[in-house]
Image (tube, rainbow, N blue to C red; front, side, top):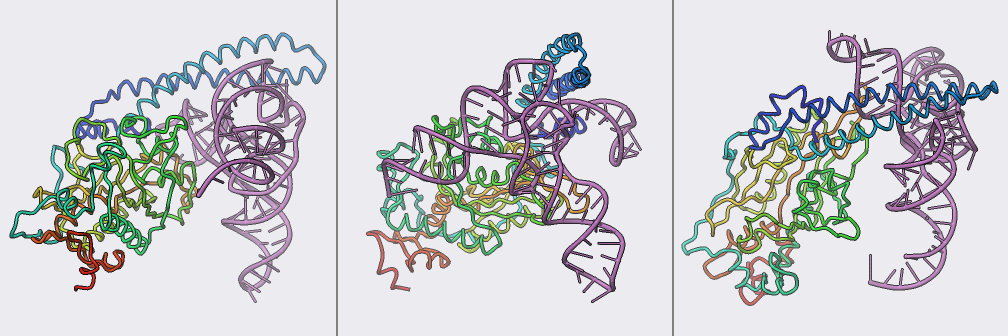
Length: 431
RNA sequence: GGAGAGGUGACUGAGUGGCCGAAAGUGCACGAUUGGAAAUCGUGUGGAGGGCUAAAAGCUUUCCCGAGGGUUCGAAUCCCUCCCUCUCCGCCA
């Protein structure tokens, strides 16, 4: 959530941000509402002040055993007026809050306008095949490690059952990523997979993206769409010490998304699912260091792909594609041979103080002891399902086998190849 | 799920209708003392909104004692609803 005062002072910047995002918002109305609100506060405060004076007087009169009836009557009238102003004020406050909760974050000046992301770098070598590469769904079903039909039977469309070495690979990736990020200095968190509405509003999913969430109706809890929600809310309504910053966390959670939009339903295989696994990086920093920390976070996420030997590129997101709460962000995209394109596998974002305002996450600076909002950052490190897609497709061979990258061998109990007919004690001993 | 006890500032803890944004202690910061430290002494030690001020500083005002309502001229204190924590019982991996 943005600060009305900030918007008032930076109207031009704010309008430019909205334009880059291609979003309409009536800022004049917002400022008018805020003027009205302040008028109510002023009037209300004056009357309350008077009331407090009267109350003291009544107390004094009573103590000197005089009759306070007249002044009590006067005060009763005053209270009615106060209630009117309060009612008006609450109404304006509600409207302002609603407006702000639905207003996206301002953009960092370096966020590109227009429709296109800017490619920042490419790493790794694209694989060359002397046969026509199959897509991951085909590979997964041929190897009997992905089962979509049975998942649909158990739950519905948009779910998958991992079997055998497929399940093993998924689990190996989770552990590998957690271990890597822990070694980079992140603290491991295993949070609840459901969050209440206050937490879900804190990070920006509510109220605007209600349609995207699975809700447990009876308890007013939401299944997490990303670990960002529970982990960022670790410090909701807290005042942190500057010395403790930056705080870096890594968390594995499943992610649940309704994918309610019209588009996306036809995407093949496990690329877009209602439930998928993800390892997420989250940082809390001072405003001075947040962009520096974002660069580090990006490198930490990239390291996963480097170690897995997967080809990828990094793009700077344009205003139109940047998330609602983000001020700036990169996507990491991994190469998908069957589609001959790069596919988003991680988004690394700086939310600046947008989430910390909503969630009231602050810190006390060392020098003056003043309180400021922290900056929050996060990035996938990485989406597991899509990493499986990349491994199956990039490391397939003409004999319908899939090579497991070296760093995963310890996590795969030594398995180096997945092939038809399951596994592969054989493959394990071969080297 | 049932029964009971409780939620007060960074923490411990007092406060049952006005002089309480809140005693006292601990902690923390600064200062004095010391060769330095400990101990001791002194001072300071919340948040949010509004107004005045070009801005900062400062002054002023309102609100905040788990959250939200209510009673009252006046609520941390009385009433109602909800949330959370603890203890006991039940159920369960």
